[in-house]
Length: 413
Image (cartoon, rainbow, N blue to C red; front, side):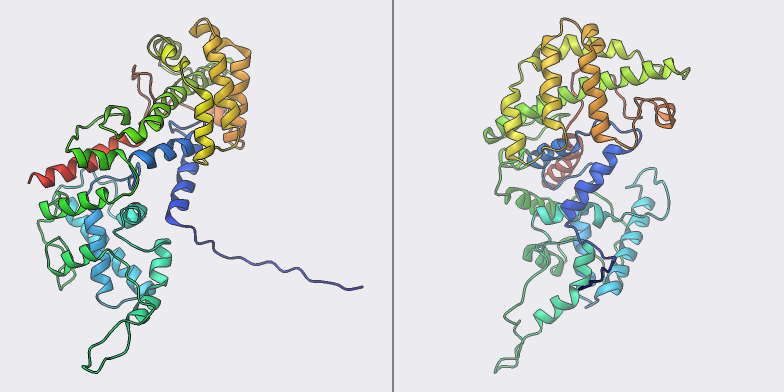
């Protein structure tokens, strides 16, 4: 009889930065104390990427889109590769952070040493804007630097001039390379130091460059639209921005989905609060049923008009369906439109079963709707708001307002 041996091995999967970002967002959706406790993250981020590309919820200021490439180009020009290049970039990022803290550009820093540098936060955005021109993660970038330098080392011609080889490629957008070489944007000096007065205000030259990168996007986005029309006003939700006609369908569904997330989360909180009291645990100090009633009065009729069939088609087209997303949204909306009052809706056995099934699908190992540790530890998240607009998800409109505001202020500087 022939025999075969099975062997096991451990390896690394080099996910793209977008894949890593989605994984982090999903894990955050399972964490304690978030406003995405029922797992709406994938659909939320699909909308957000269409409206405000190159942004993420943990970004802070637009100038990092300049400062990060400046650091990486500085290290690239010194011919460092692999771990040496990575350590040098990390050192420069840490020194930059210390300088920004000293200059009070970073308020209330939590600790002197950080585990996530700006490059890891802005990497996907740099790729999306075409500032970094290649694919892959930061780890792949550093590991591939040796190949990059080899691709650049071609033969000498008859005049002894060096020419890149046939397989030569560039890592960074040529315009930002030229701006750095001409010292027209902020970058480290020959001693690998930033100027002492470095802050996070975008200069006019930097702002013009970033505007061009957002306008170069081939898809219709909210950000590119406000740059194209010079029509920016900070707003809490994307439907309050000057958005292009091409996004009308997306905007309409995002608005309804934000209302859906709000009422579903409110019902979830009511159920958790009641279960805590049934198990002799302290109730929250907020009147959750009052919040449900206010949502019902302000948003229920608008939400009842949602074209669920078209929304489900949209999730299929964008490949943003996960788990029981489709049946949950469809059935939850059906029960909402059929209910006669906020109280009858919240107390409906069908609605409660839908919430239980949703939690089971999205938080199988951290279920709260049963006695135990996770119910005992639950409390209203710090992000809780009594916002009466009827919405919950802003699809990164907040951070996008900061990023775009920084650039417009630079354009007017």
